[in-house]
Length: 169
Image 1 (cartoon, one colour):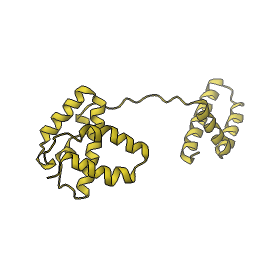
Image 2 (tube, rainbow, N blue to C red):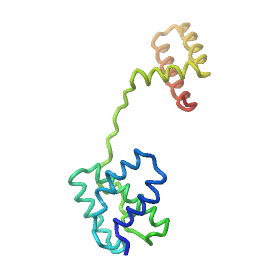
Image 3 (cartoon, rainbow, N blue to C red):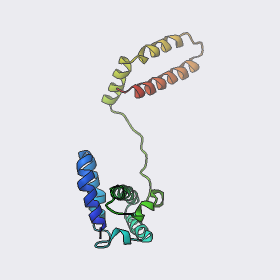
């Protein structure tokens, strides 16, 4: 009789504590392990029905939609790992889709610090694309239409940033 708590402890001991970085371990311990270890206390994982999992995540969704989805994704990961290790034969929570629970995390704009911009600038200067950008700038001084020159220069800058991102810092 393997419970949700047993699965999470097995997953934590044999995967989270062994294979993940410190920040990932802290994240899992503070979310899925902390919040779901006592879910369906004393009941075998195999006996928990799909509807019961959905009801549990619906309750979590009412408290915090983003956290509910994160908990589901993390629990599915843990249970899937336990299934692949033959710790449990199956768990219907792996069939609950994240799109049916909670809400997505919002994407936010990233604003670079001056130090990050400086790192990018140095990387561009050190890369082979720096000479291409300088040549592009020189060619644009001959362009009769300033609007076209500005658009072309903007395109060159975007190309340089993409190239540096692919080459890495």
